[in-house]
Length: 249
Image 1 (cartoon, one colour):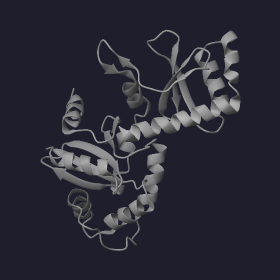
Image 2: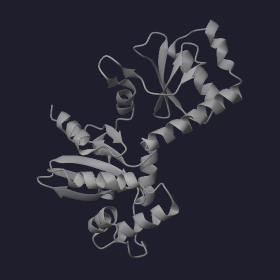
Image 3: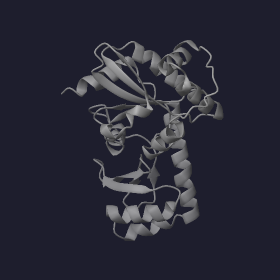
Image 4: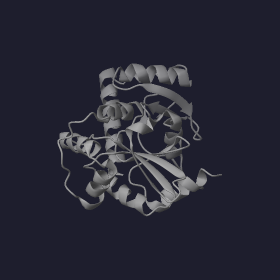
């Protein structure tokens, strides 16, 4: 949740900065075309190069539009002046509509993941596959690593994604260069066994960082499923089990 709030805060700063730079020029849209193309064009002009407005779409709420800004969702009115940076929840069904749209907007192709650049381990028959982008210094990553241990018939691909500090990069390289990288990763994440070695071998860390940025991964852990959807943060076992069960339907 903290990482989600940080992403929201960063997005708010980007949009507010854009509005200030534009002098709230979008107010002129009130007398113009309220269509989605016009909103997209005007918001992109307002943001400049700070972020990409990927799409604008209607929501179930009349007069309220969904705006995909760099893979994150905000809402605006038909004029494009007023920005709502938060979650939309259907109070009748309890459905978080923002989460649903984020999952769809940021869906990937599982087959595009370069799994050879990940640490792989399996439990049981290994039939249920997930990929997780993790930082070795991330407390929530350690928590979800513990959660994976509680699950059965699972294969986990861990992409080393050191984004928290320079030390994270050092540790990620030490893990990858270990004789048994799966053991080194588990020992560190689950038991805090100190990593050894200088991490001087060829590693996929830089490539993983570029991949994560292209997939709009702004926090760790980020868990991907075979249908291409993701769950950000340290989901508990029940949440992961429900998601994996839904893939069989």
